[in-house]
Image (tube, rainbow, N blue to C red; front, side, top):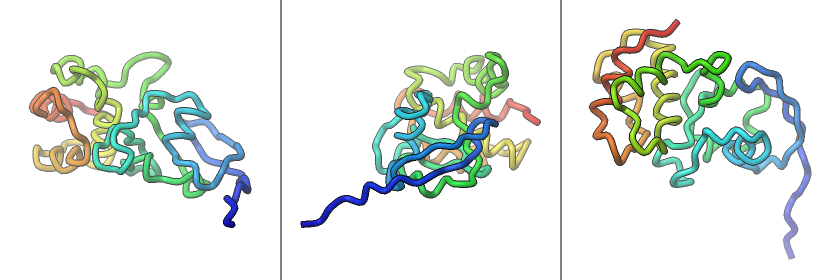
Length: 159
């Protein structure tokens, strides 16, 4: 009979600008660590197989599907969730533009969509439409048709 390895691991990483140290199972998914252990529920779980992008977070500057990242992989990393881009309760300019351009409808995909756009804008402050489409290609939206999302991203300037 096989037994599960329940050895805990110690993790140290930066989450939304704050140093975090904790113990967890090495095979716990990042999304579960964020939502269940750290109460950061802005990260949504959609498909659980990395296809929908609802669980997107920024890891070391890149947009990743948190449902595909195991806790053991984040040691020493910097993670940014949707909660981490606002400033003292003020919406980030990207969040403001999603509202301004009508890019928010049901809202389920929005945290992941915004974080994919955020990673793009950090790398390319003035992306063209093709770059925007490529950056959000892993994020599925069933409501907007993407036009408003692309406009919101195109018209956002961040530093």
